[in-house]
Image (cartoon, rainbow over all chains, first blue to last red):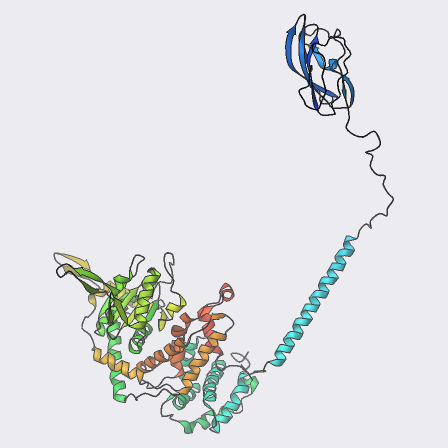
Amino acid sequence: MSSSFPGFDLSLPRGALPGEDLLRASPSVGMPARWNDVVLPGSELVAVSADRKAPLALRIVATRPHGDGFRYDFEYWGLEPGAHDLRTLLQRRDGSSTADLPELRVEIRSVLVAEGAALPNAPRPAELPQLGGYGALLLAGGIVWVAGLVAILVVGRRRRAAESAGQPRVRSLAERLQPLVERAMRGELSREERAQLELSLVALWRRRLGLEESRPAEVIAQLKRHPEAGPLLVRLEEWLHRPDARGAGEIPALLAPYRELRADELDGPGGAR
Amino acid sequence: MTMTSPQVSAADLARTEEYIRRVRERVGTVVVGQDVVVERLLIALFSGGHLLLQGVPGLAKTLLVSTLSKSIDLGFARVQFTIDLLPSDILGSEVLDQRTNEFRVRKGPIFTNLLLADEINRAAPKVQGALLEAMQERKVTIGPETFRLPAPFLVIATQNPVEQAGTFELPEAQLDRFMLVHRLDYPSPAEEREVLRRNAALGIQRQDKGAIVQTEFDVLDSRPVGSVTEIVAAMEAVSSIHVSDTFVDHVVEVVHRTRTHPDVELGCSPRAGISLIKASRARALMHGRSYVVPEDLYALAEDALLHRMRLKYGSIAEGKTGRQVLDEILRSMGGEARA
């Protein structure tokens, strides 16, 4: 008999006799081993169906007639260490007794170290972790978040305040118009101021008449039809846009009503917002 | 920096006014309403700019331009822009004359006074580019030869603002070549009633042994109401319209505000200001003035500036439109300011 698996010495003289106590060279748990040319008397043997909990599994690789008996090639796996008898896993095909079979003993060894070496470490006494800390953690996180938010708001407000401090103040329409009117009446307007005066008067009348939502292209036409705004704008156009600048003498009289313009006069319906 | 030019005389003004009145009357016999569009067409013609008309189909854009061309005695050509149009279909090309075995230049429809480029956004960009280049340079090169386009030369392009599938939107740089972009509105109910009444009165036109139903194009009076001389006189008159320093300041301010408005990504170029002043001069002439006034600026701002502005993506996402932003800019002029 010879092993088909390198590393396992399963040599046995061919045609081992039944009844001989055969101690097999022991494979380790889970590793397959072969035992060939085992001559056993009686009718043909077959392997017992596998049982999941059996300590050994057996497969008959080959069966050949041999005199009154048969010659078998066995393959087996040990699932638990120790000595096992293959007879427990054999039965006759014709259902007759297997009591006449010799002991077929095999040894399965364990590769694990002897008892005690694989025991887990003994638990060390330690303090239990604090239970219920999640709420405190949430509270701390919330405080940090609120503090960060407040810091961002404060910094942003200071920055805006610094920026607005550096910017010129927004002047209302009345505040812009009054000095322009004063200077126009004295004939001291510069070129840019003339343009501003005209646009400011258009803006003033647009607010007075509540035309702020009207389309700008339509507003001028509507203002020119207004009994008070119309003559003013036409005279301004003649003064500012005609090549011969007609009507400059009438300008002070036309602008006189706009000298004492109050800022709150433009408030109210259609007024300044 | 007053723009000084030879002053237009009262007689010239009166003659030009009379000419414009005749043109408007003639157009009015066929086209109902659309006074503003006729005004914009004449402004473009008299100030040497080009005009893009944006409007949904059926607003009589083509009829209007055809009527105008016949009224003012100018050469007219119409090109329907399509995806398979080639630059040579517009500009012209060299063809081999088999009798002489030499190449001969065959000029395209662009060699006319008044070119209607219908649905310009349906053509491929290379065709649009070829047309827009010719519009700016007023000359065309075919093979080895360069030809000047006839004078006056005016391109009136139309564009449908809906059905954008399969179209090539004109980029801002090319839109900038158009002096004015006018957006047509639907007619008022009264005007629409008149349109329907006139259309119902059209009969049939006998032709050979059969007949066809008449359209408005069939009833156009082909006799012009004036000559090219009167157009040239009007162009001269426009160039002599007075532009005050104050008006220039207004134009600079509105153009500048388009560049600094928080909703605007791309403001107007200096060409926008130039177009606005040119168009204002023509409008002043048409309104019987020898000088421009802020009313001209407000009336023409949308047509001269809006197509030269591009809003920020965020503002568009908020639902703002260019027209709203421009109105806001115009309303803010002369209001509060920083001291």
